[in-house]
Amino acid sequence: MAEVHPDLIVKFPARRGYLSISRLNATALAADNGFDIDELDDLRLAVDEAVAWLIDDGSFEAETSAPGSDREIELRITFGARTLEFTGTRSGSVTDVPDMSELVQAVLTLTVDQYETGVDEHGRLYVKLSKRIAADD
Image (tube, rainbow, N blue to C red; front, side):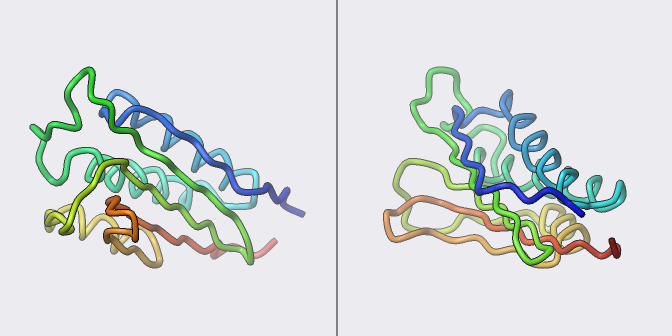
């Protein structure tokens, strides 16, 4: 039987150099909870693209990528009912959701069961991913 962990919350600076933190934490939790290697590969790619979009606002030259930026990313990773829920939120205030490239949308569509982007009640940009285990125990 898979080991179920409580929610994992991780915070790090909103810079691309920290992308591996999100990828490693999400896949480690998923691996401990029964995801197979193909599902882990999909999740790794989806998390990488989603958090890169969150950091960059869809642009590689966004202010949040600059060294010294005080913005941070908060990740909440939850596993329950054979589904991993991943929510990334970027500090700071925005009013509109930036466009997501067609490539990133395609990657997310092909690698996770559901995804959502938006602005929360505090004006923070977020991305949510949901991935179910397909394999039987």
